[in-house]
Amino acid sequence: MQFYPVAIVKILLPVALICGAFIGRANLDLLGSESRAIVENLAYLLCFATLLVAHQFNRSRIMLAAFGVAIFYWAVQRYLQVSLAHPDASRGYLAISLALPVLTLYLLLLPEKGIWNVYGLVFSLAFVLLGLVCIQLGPWLPEANAAAAEYYAPRPTQNYVLSLGVTLLVSLVALVGALLLFMRNNEVEAALLGAFLSLYLVLALLHVEHISASMCSAAALCLLWGLIRSSHAMAYLDDLTGLPGRRALNEKLTMLGGSFTIAMLDVDHFKRFNDTYGHDVGDEVLKLVASRVRTVGGGGTAYRYGGEEFCVVFPRKSLDESIAHLERVREQIGDYIMSLRDRNLRPARAREGTRKRGATRIGSDQFSVTVSVGVASRSEDNPDAEAVLAAADKKLYQAKKAGRNRVAY
Image 1 (cartoon, one colour):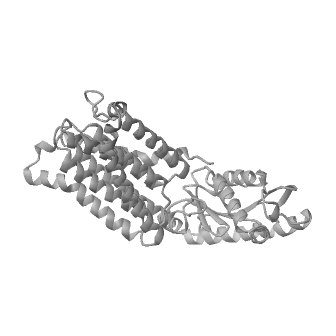
Image 2 (cartoon, one colour; image 1 turned 180 degrees about the vertical axis):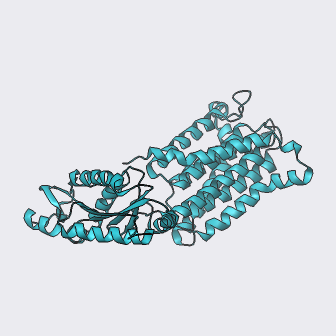
Image 3 (tube, one colour; image 1 turned 90 degrees about the vertical axis):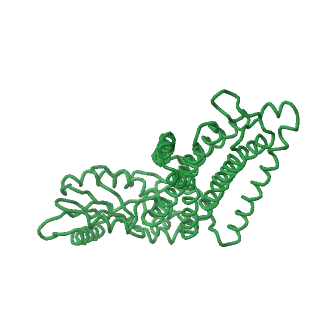
């Protein structure tokens, strides 16, 4: 199980949106009646926009979340604009309070299956049914017994409205969401957590003026941001390795100017290795190589060029300044020992497996792979990025001819 601590960066913008909305809430009284009407309906407009974009990109989780935010805002405006001492308002408040963490947890755990297919329709129907169950639990829980009534009673403190029971449930969902964010390193989890936090503040600070309009708008913005970011990742990041892909590289090449160096890396004998052990093991090799190339240093940015090829761009770096970083990466990849867990994939004879794979056998269950690297920098002979890239590819071919597992420049 791999964790990505860097994923914490993805939650920073949602938190900033929430803080900005909370601060801006205090100035809503300064607006005119027409402007205030726009602000009060902004959450609906943003949810509608998110629904349209989510439908366009076939994203069921964000679409369900946007639908949930719109219903949440409508319910708060419709039923919770009176004192919670009123029995109907108290039951409605508890129902909404239970639905928020339960439905958020459902969306966090839900696999993305798209919208217009059997899975998408079943998951959407389950989302609605789960919400209806929470609505039924709202009136029933306080009436179960005296302990439950006290456990789910609102306003445990003077400036905090949520009950102890719902607060613990919210904390649990927030913890699960944070763990999933660190495990998946995905913008959707960050967006769902941001929306969850926004709506939680509505319920926790229900007595604060304009809290629902500002925080529900922030929740919709978090979802819209997450949808845009995840769509950007689909277009620019490679699914298997997580590195920027060919499209991102092409854009980077158009921005280069002055001095720069480009390196092309290729996994040695990868086709033979793939044919021997299958694509699953080959994918693990590519992930390994990508994880090492990502840490190249020296200001270099790694890209997956295609297949078993990778590209590293060093802006404002000369050839000599880049070589040492590439040699370090090459050595790290060659020194890493991988274990083959599936015995059915192992060739009957170790020597035959090594010959077919083209990798170095360490033991009967272990092996390592190597990479060849070609490097070129901008010069009179290579005046632009395309020429430098072509020159680096030629150097890569030279490294292959010279015996592989080396850097040619």
